[in-house]
Length: 231
Image (cartoon, rainbow, N blue to C red; front, side, top):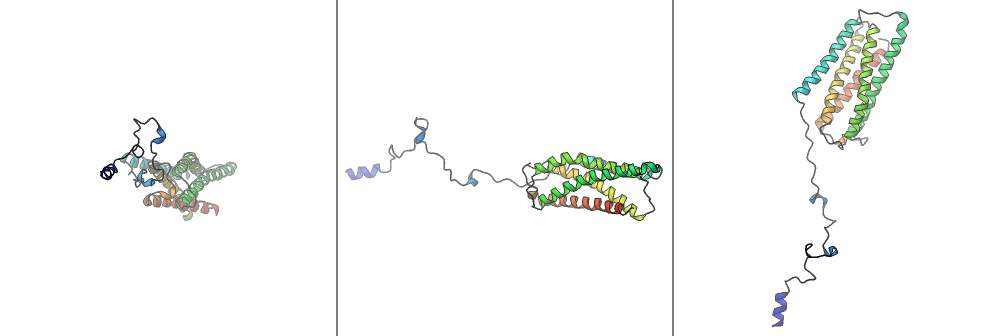
């Protein structure tokens, strides 16, 4: 009889094995703690894939208008450069301003492109926040130098009979239009989490950024090398 009773009671939890109820148990030390060794996948969701927002029609229109404005300014300066001449005494100061504009504009472009390429190629752990902060600081320098090059180029009276001069001028225009395209890249970047590493960007976007930086360097170096040889 006692054996049957012990067998029947064996499956009923006793006071020592029953899980305490926090509402009725005043001693919190008896409440079991969560398992700290649980797998993080059970509580931390995996981040979803990056989704790049397509530029809106208004953004496309704005970038197109800016690119058209850069092209129009380039054409106006090109025409005006054949109508204005400066005296010999002002030639050296204008050349100095031209070189200062080149230093400011191209120096800023070179710094941004090198940092971006190093981040995209996983040589440095740059985040999106780093890139956007750099863009805020550097963009005004790039455009100040670029406009300075255009204005001083007007006063230097370029010789349009030289074929290499046309290559230099077109390279300068390409650099400006590519700068407008870079603004579109920055706007797409702004839609991604700030902690994103440049090396983790979606492949189509990374390819676009690398092409923009490469094209920028080709355009700037083409204009610089032709100008270096006195054209």
